[in-house]
Image (cartoon, rainbow, N blue to C red; front, side, top):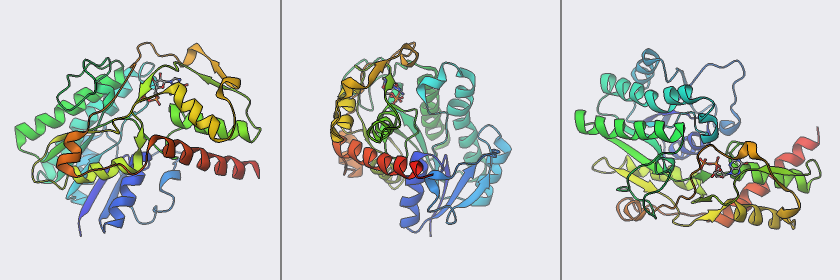
Length: 323
Ligand code: GDP
């Protein structure tokens, strides 16, 4: 039986990854930070199967202890401050959780279990003001937010630990990936939640920022399979994971609203508070390397993803209305 340690296990990706690893027969340890109001919504079905460890990404001693207790074959570092827009008002907290914490995690592994395989959740936001399209593993980074800058640090420190200490450390450069478990502040979930509320008569508008932004949106459930595949290879490496398709925020609105027979134009209000100080205009990934080397493939396309999210939000909002 293999053992994995996941940081960020209660988040969207962590919960899908934990399910995948439990299905494969792994013993799964999840790191949790103490909070006065814990949120286990995403892991509710598997909460009792996860071995919980207390720790904080910025407390190296607690990470050393977590690695010592779990003695993992694989470590997946998914925890971070992950919302781009929040990184301008909280740039230092973002740097601590999204950048420096990666070194803490790598140090804990290097000190306690240097032969554990390590996955770092890197991000397409590192490409930012893109210098070529589509973006691939060799595309230079040009981050456009404190979040993007922090992720560039996390990426390079992972590469550096691989090259300095010969650790099996991989960086997965994942393009936007969504699901019914996505946080409500991200644009896909914000839209599908609003569509459900508007359809059910409990909301009458949605306030949005830049509708022209283009993103390469995939399904988180497909993307966690790529994380696992990266750690099963003979050699550690970095991979772009994407769909290779790009859609605008406007198209997202169109697909989500028309699914319930509404016209988004009747409900969208542009609000400058959702426009960012510096925008990433477009992201489009070329994941040829992952397809060829990992044999990774997508199961859910853009429309299926948005329809799935609207369906789940309709169910949830309806059940909330009963109370
Ligand atoms: P990101 O790519 O990690 O920043 O993911 P988001 O889902 O937060 O944003 C995707 C894109 O949607 C960005 O270019 C945003 O500027 C754009 N966008 C437009 N309106 C909104 C909004 O109301 N909320 C969010 N989160 N993004 C918006």
